[in-house]
Image (cartoon, rainbow, N blue to C red; front, top):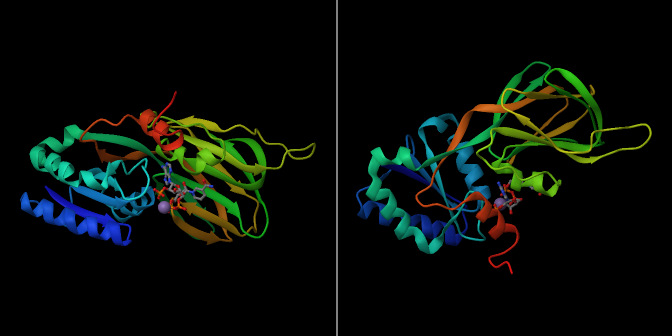
Amino acid sequence: MKYDVVHRGDELSARLAEKFLALASERGMMQNTEQPDLVISIGGDGTMLHAFHRYVDRLDRIAFVGVHTGHLGFYADWKANELPELVEHMASIRDAGLEEKIVRYPLVEAKVIRERVTSVHLACNELTLRGVRSMLVARVDINGSPIEMFRGDGICVSSPSGSTAYNKSLNGAIIHPSLEAIQIAEMASINNRVYRTLGSPMILPKHHHCEIVPKAGQHLHISVDHLQFEYDDVVAIRCSVSEKKVRFARFRPFPFWVRVKEAFIGADVD
Ligand code: NAP
Ligand code: MN
C-alpha cells in the first residue's frame, strides 16, 4: 500500500509523522507522495482540509485517514497513541482490502463565473460568499427560479460533513454524510419591511442547484474550505452536489452521531 502523510506543522504533529513513517516502513509500506492510495492527515480537521485540497485531482483513487493531535475532529478521529494500531490495520488489509473499508462523503461543487474566467471548485466543508467593504447583495435562484434577494453578511453553502463546521455556527442543521445534499445557510440577513429573505437554512438534494447572483460591481470574498479569494467581477456562483466524493478509510466503526456527541456535548451524558 502506497501512502503519504500530511501534518499540521507543529512539533507534536511533525514528530508523529516521523513515527508513522518508521512504523509503516517496519511493515514494508512505503511513502509515495505522487500516487498514494492512502493519505494520513496528522493534526486537526483543518489539516484534513489541506490534505484534501493537495490531492483534489486524485479523489477517486485516494482514501484519507485523520489522526488528531488536539481535540477530537470530525475528519481526524484517530488518537496520537493509536498510530501502531492504525499501521496494523493498514498492513493487515494490504491493497485489495482497502476498498471494503471506504466510506464516501458528498462534496459541494461550485462554479464561480466571473466576467472573463470561470473556475470550478470542490469544497469538502463549504463555500462562503461575503461582502468585503459592504454587505452582500445577491439574488438567490434555485433550479433557475429566483427565490429571494439577499442582503446581509453572506451566504454559506455546505456539504453534509461540513455541516458541523461553519454551517453549525450559522444555526444550520447537522446532516448525516450518507445524505447526498448541500445546505444553504444565511449569515446575518437583513429582514425588515423592505428587505426579506427566507431566513431558514435550505437543504437541496442531488441534481438541484442554487445560483447566487451578486449585484454587479461588488467587491466579494469567497472561501472554499480554508482557501480564500477576493474578486470584484463575480457574475454568479452555481452550487450543487458534486458527482465526485471524498473517500475515507474507516478501519473501525465510529458513527457520525457519536462523533457529533463527543465533539459538541462531551463524553458523558446523564
Ligand atoms: P480554523 O479557523 O482552525 O477552523 C475553525 C474550526 O473549525 C477548527 O476548530 C476546526 O477544527 C473546525 N472544523 C473544520 N472542519 C470541521 C468540520 N467538518 N466539523 C467540525 N469542525 C470543523 O480553520 P481551518 O482549520 O483551516 O478550517 C477551515 C474551516 O473553518 C472552514 O471550512 C470553516 O468550516 C471553519 N470556519 C468556521 C467559522 C465559524 O464557525 N464561525 C468561521 C470561519 C471558518 P480543527 O481545530 O481540528 O482544525
Ligand atoms: Mn484548524
